[in-house]
Image 1 (cartoon, rainbow, N blue to C red):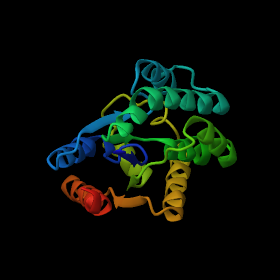
Image 2: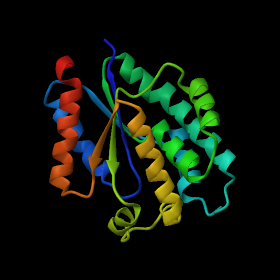
Image 3: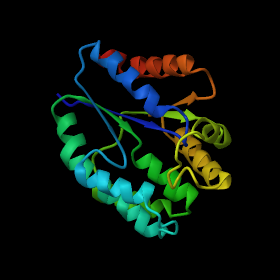
Length: 207
């Protein structure tokens, strides 16, 4: 039986990574076999690409090269982790997926949505998330939350860049019913409650 594919999206500091273990536990308690992963990353090759994308000192990485690196990482991740797990009936929880590429490389850097869609059709022509949880938060608030740790390349972007990212995410959410938007400015407990409720509502008839 085909499994489920759930993605978590949002700008920096929204709390996606904090929420993922709680969602995984919630599903495991209901008998689901869960795989948690992230993008870019998830395999040795993809994690090496992540290192280049997030921690490289090359601050002027060409936007098209950046786009292609994200999709190269994604293809390795899909082939080795995501698709095999889904095909075995597992639930895959993924911290970011192609919506992030639309938001960051499209909305943030100005790459054509048509280019991103074309690469999506090449890399994952038959796969889209069953549910996407969009954790929405003003970028300046997100950056305050993560101010204590070393900033990666995306966290060093301007507020204007991150506002474009956020706006792109919200536009995508308005255009698709697979999105559930969660107000990430609330307490961590309330954010978690709403995320779990969204999962239960979306998959309740299939649980």
